[in-house]
Length: 177
Image (cartoon, rainbow, N blue to C red):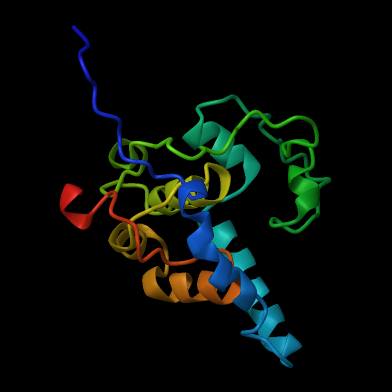
């Protein structure tokens, strides 16, 4: 007797890639002749990612529970705190072992994104890791609820072409959260 175990719902962006084509054609059109506005948005994105601690050591430590090299402050480092120089030994300049999910695969988002976290930046870090590294979808209501900046952050990411809204997504409905 075959016992059929139901497959978890597909949360992969790969299964929705055809829907992304119209959005991809619009990338860059938010800034037709206004380089200053684009630079301002890039600066906002940089500050947002820093605020949510979206950098390699934090992702390694808090998302994937991997050890990191703690930097020591010996008084000789006068670099800006946000400078890549501070993180040069932590970024993966070699092989990366995190693989995005593919068509038909899923992430149990209810267990991966802690919407009730007492650490203010943690849910944002989890959402950005889910979207940008693991290539999984995130319900709009969860994004708006837990990501620092909520709707304004969504508008920024949409303008920059880093995310798109999926109208055909029937997985991870709001009621499941």
